[in-house]
Length: 240
Image (tube, rainbow, N blue to C red; front, side, top):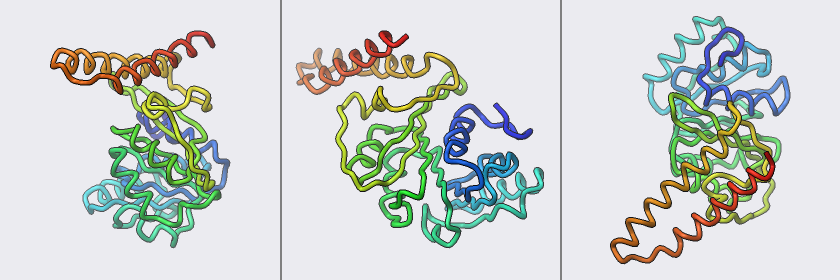
């Protein structure tokens, strides 16, 4: 997928979609930016008026600088060496993206920042793993998961979330922690990806149950998760 001539992978295009859903004319922050494709695309499209792209290492920032020069947006995007969200308040971003990290690390980064604990700040989150732990953290820390999405890239399924702080502590079932609440507004880069994601999770849980059962271990929690995933599949089939 592409945005204003800049190629975005499906997972980054989904993150860009969630950022654009927050409205036009926002200031964008990309945490752990690597090549800065996401902020560059949003500035090129006019959705973001300015952006900051940060990383904890200089190497990714050097690659990001090449992208900004190539697409002529170096004057609108600031590159900064920073750990997570440290110092982000200086740039006053309206939309903050954290993509391509594990859910535990993303939770830690968000937990250290007071700036994002505001209804005025939107979080675009694309965990590479441990999405369940990220959802559990968000729910327990007072963030609302406003939208969810699934993208497929190179045969892999990636989850993406749009979240905002409202101070309300929530709880989710084990199945919803794995794949998101079925009732949450959802975007897919291709039809049927959400159901494919749930079925993928179910197969993994069923293999775990078989292994633990063969070893004489307790499988009750895993069976509860499997039942919840089956219920989500049924609700998805009923809607189609």
